[in-house]
Amino acid sequence: MPVSWTLLIVLALAGAGYLLTRMRAVAMAGGDTRKLHSRPGHYGWNAALLTALPAILLIAVWRFVQPAAGTALISMVALALAAAGLAFALIRTSPSFRARNAVEGMVKGLLIACASIAIITTAGIVLSMLFETGQFFRQYPWTEFFFGTTWSPKFGGGSQLGMLPLLWGTLYISLIALLVAVPIGLFAAIYMSEYASMRMRGVVKPLIEVLAGIPTIVYGLFAMITVGPLLRDWFSQPLGLGASASSVMTAGLVMGVMLIPFVSSLSDDIINAVPQSLRDGALGLGSTPSETIRKVVLPAALPGIVGAVLLAASRAIGETMIVVLGAGASARMGLNPFEAMTTITVKIVSQLTGDTDFAAPETLVAFALGLTLFTVTLGLNIVALYVVRKYREQYE
Image 1: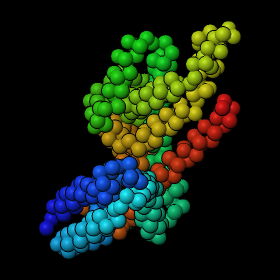
Image 2: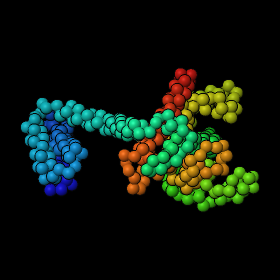
Image 3: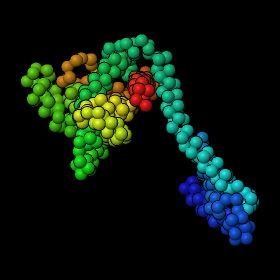
Image 4: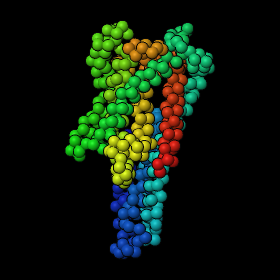
């Protein structure tokens, strides 16, 4: 029997258990629900949860541990467990049974399990990267990886896997993107929250948020076809800074446009959450609207704005398609923003794409790069948390 059929039967049993247990509880109370400890629906939900949850959990764990195991045995055990849960719920039902407490306890456990998934997933990702990174450093010196300035992977030997050019390209492109996104997004948020009418805000905010729904591959094509040639013909070639349409500036500008909604929408919500009493107090003391925004509203909203900028920075650091199509794949270090460069994410994809030997250092280096990227993002979170705590102590 397919697993999908088993799940459907389990859910049907849970629904039947809900109805049967609910009617049984009412019947045992002689039709007077006031004699029941809990509402009739709680008795039904107790049976439904006892029927469905153990069987579904068994199927999920079994398929994860033994994905090639026969479905017939899984189906038999799951259905038997569901039937046992239904029978136990029916036997347990009585007017004095605390069904509400039992249901709330099961729901609370389910919520805790759902909340734990994020923690367990994060731990699994970090541990997997640590294991594969350890395999890489057993084959390649860590000093050459962290401090090497040349990136030249060659399957078969003779590779130079210095990560500094990739880290430089990642930070350089992300910096340009943030220099575009943060001022524009923050000024747009200030306008929408403090100056725009409700009608104008209702038009402007959705239009800005449309940018967040555009696929990154479309941004990459826009960078490659339009922005790159435009920058080359109008700036880099006339100034003698380069003749390539793929450059750090191309990717940074387009990525910055993509990040504007992340900054503007979150900052707008945070600024609107600042109590109106702070604005009224500042205006009552003689401050102008611009002084109120600069000296009262923005400092009070600073923790949330820092969070918005951090989200945009994390998004920029992890972007791939815009960099591939807009900045090229050249691993180099330089200050010229009109030169082609690349990022860590691009090289992670390239090292894991195609027919590769997953035991070779040229492939395992992708996990070391991923762990480095994770560490950089974690550092940004720590800095942002410090700023948030500092200003919260001042304004709360």
